[in-house]
Image 1 (cartoon, rainbow, N blue to C red):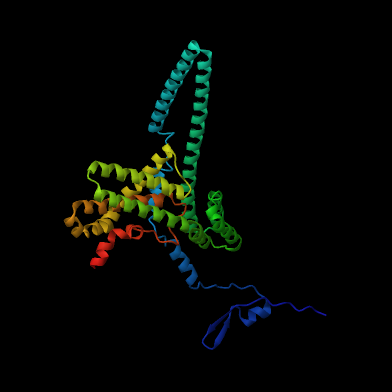
Image 2 (cartoon, rainbow, N blue to C red):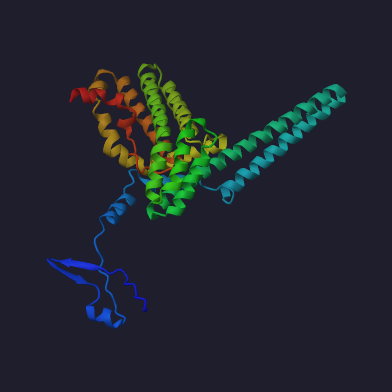
Length: 358
């Protein structure tokens, strides 16, 4: 009994009422090899994926340039870094010699005083070591967040599922010591097992884990802008305005960095401030020329009634811009699923006069 050969699946194309096969009947009977021509078809899902790849709501190039100029910048192999290292070494040697001389003088007067001085010097050395260790850990955490931001942007652009899963896993590890993110991290771990598409996985990570942090950052920006506008409007001295605005900007940048998991120390804050300044320099001209300045000019009536009121509104707008730049450079993910907020989104109370007027 001869075994019948099982036919392979065949492709058909419909043209009106006729059905055209990929192979002719004669080729199927003779079994001769033939060349099948596969015609490319329009894929609506591929076009949608391409649109999502370019659909980042934020200026990602400006953010990465600002991070490279500040948080990711290395000072060790630069002349400025060599200068700071040399000066710090000299100051450390001078301080060590001074402390040693003080301890020797105390021993000359009394053994008890010398022992007490030596103990205090040891405690100071331990505290300085712990502080430096925390400082370097804070800088390393800042660099980790900035590198994760760039890696997630690259994984989203290339739709690399493997890279997306690795980076989202790193994002969960970044907040593993935050109890308020426990539910979102558990949800993302389930998504890591179920979702294959890299862009969808990154978008879900942004919506579930980073979006609540965005809301906290927006509240901090709104509160700082309101305080600056009110204090500037009632302050009798311009010098007090300057100190208060600068102080609020420093506190706001540190608070936003803490919300996103990278609260800096002293040296880390300098790098953060450099990144924020670079982001303002890159995007500030467009933002001020297109939205901020036009909205500020809309308060002409308030400025005519009181010059201090106009200054308060303008200082509030500038504080909000600093907060938004800090939010952009401290955020571990780019703005993909969530829209990047503007000044009117975080501080709408500064524009109520325009809205009621219109």
